[in-house]
Length: 340
Image (cartoon, rainbow, N blue to C red; front, side, top):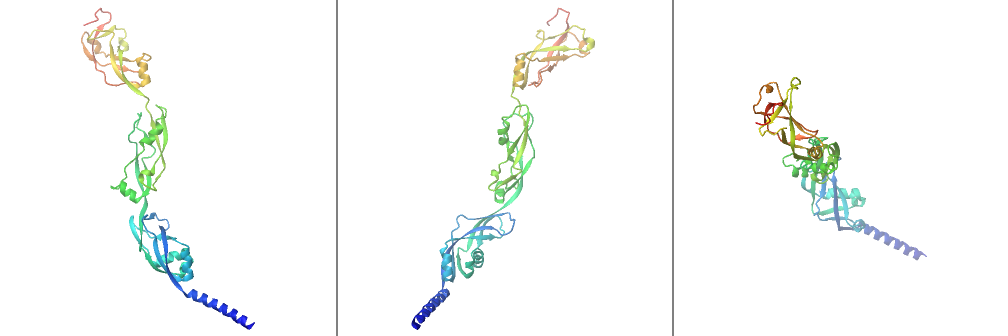
């Protein structure tokens, strides 16, 4: 019995000695580490990305065998790294052993028992940018539709939150080029009724200002009146009439042009909505010219002189070009003389 007890105690003592000895054995192993980065300052406008070409870091750690073996078995570690403020551009951020151990221990407490022997490479390649807000003017360029008046924007400019690197590229002079929304506006306006004021809401596309860009406000109102379809035509045989004062209404006056053809007519060129111009051509509406005679005109007879009629046209119709004066002479309407 005593022998059995002695053997049992010997075995337990052997295990205890082995375990104690094993815990005192240290090892050095190499671990794979990659990094995820973020700004250290709260509310920072800095954007930080790891260079895609950055290799996996090799980190040598030293410590108790069991701890080392445990962390090695868990494979590559993704370490959260807080970065101080850097200027926009490429940066090599140093990876110090003390800093790395602190980051590892914050995420995995077993690293508190280990020593960082070496880190390769010694720095992390980063690309740093910052978000900035700038103003950009809005423009309606390359318009193809006809408008009664120039389209109106609800505001002349908007704010753009964009990367500093994109601003440097797009605005080397320090001022962004106007944002053209003409095509976007006309995609909506082209289907609206002509001749009526209409307002459309145009979504502003921030893609032109680079990745992560945002525009505020995100939409803009455009108010415009699309002109009705217009045409220009010659209107023949427009009558030219005499207009006298009330006191001279009883005088039998006739105007005779140099060609002697009466009644006097002229061909005029007009422009306006196609529908109205066609009605005038078909005779559904009328145009006329009036020669307003003054008292002095009534004292000069049988003498040719230039007279400029005042043309009266249907609503919406305008003269396309200024007509020439007509050379006429006044004759007594009761006379048989009709020609020069």
